Length: 196
Image 1 (cartoon, rainbow, N blue to C red):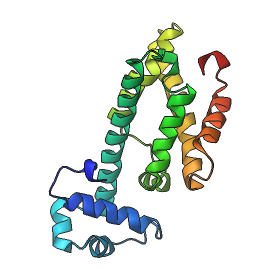
Image 2 (image 1 turned 45 degrees about the horizontal axis):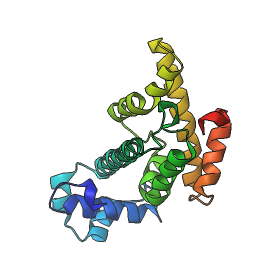
Image 3 (image 1 turned 60 degrees about the vertical axis):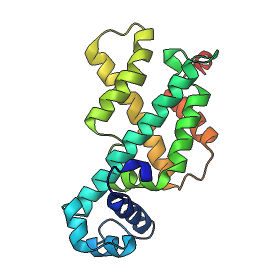
Image 4 (image 1 turned 135 degrees about the vertical axis):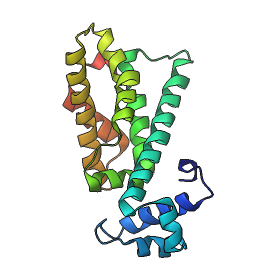
């Protein structure tokens, strides 16, 4: 998680401590004292950075999503520079990109478990808009869906469906393979074979 924080390491240590504690405790059971003990940091130092444990949790989630979206967008950009450039409708639908996304989730499942525990979205409204703009809208434009309101609803449906499947997978500790979850997602969304 070192790449998530841009301070002298205090935020990283606190964030990692929270993630470690969440593996054996609920958020309600965790105290600032427990986080500080796990991180080897004084309580007063904690409060120099965060108002409470929930602000720390928000910071971990927001920083994680920024890194996560950056990695995913970087992957799409690399694929588009090769001979096998993706069509817009394949950004999240192709086997390669969907499985890559799911492998990132699996690799960082402790962080994503925070989202599952809080039953919140994986991204802020600004990050959601970025996801819609960069991934979903190009797909909708391919199908000549120009109605802005319709595009908003379709984006919400698509991202909500993927989000729900991934949350369930995380709650099961990512037991199934990413290929299996990708297949489930594609079947739920009824994606035609020609786009895979």
